[in-house]
Length: 304
Image (cartoon, rainbow, N blue to C red; front, side, top):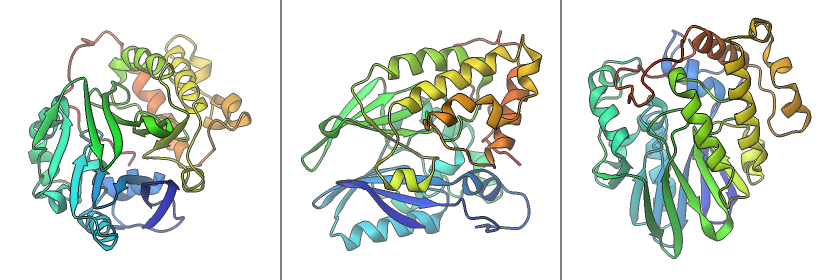
């Protein structure tokens, strides 16, 4: 795991995107064939003896390394925020079981509903530690002297939580934004996700740090707001696949050629599999499902 320092007071704990390297097993599993192959990052906002950890990473070992790094920096007070309920963001919760762990109420509900699945998974997340402080809408915190705002964002997952650091116009985006492309986990809610992306584009942010992205871009300070527009265009084009079947036949490079040329996003070959899975999910979904459904039965994402 690499510890990056994209902006002052923010650490990025990055692992994955290592060709030919698997972290858990040669057999198919959610950790290697999803998060690790695509690359994944958790973050910590640090000011003096206080830290706010944004997601607990993909394993107990990763979470332990995060906590050890913070302790070596003389951090003595740690809080945790969960970006959403998916396995690759909560697998290290046990390491922070003695800390305040904050999540949206929808996240707590989804985790509780999937506890048995997570604890019997491959690899298992056992015990699955649940959040102990819930919020809805927005929540304002301070990490030392640094103001942080939690906002609910219904993008990628109905329960998304993003962090805004207004002092430097920074957005920690979780999985609401992703490079090369977003992962479609709730196809029946894509219209809602688009509405939320349009709202996000009006926020006062200039730098974006996603949980899945290119490590060199994250290390250099993150993405610009063009990542929001690129995500919108991708989702809009996915929806067109329902009525324009020729679009569904395009490979990823062709599908997002405009945004690759503009350097809003950067091509990473493993996202070809994600794109084809996204197309299948969208074209096989009628889009007529109840848009207010909270998808308590959705399994953890995987690209196996």
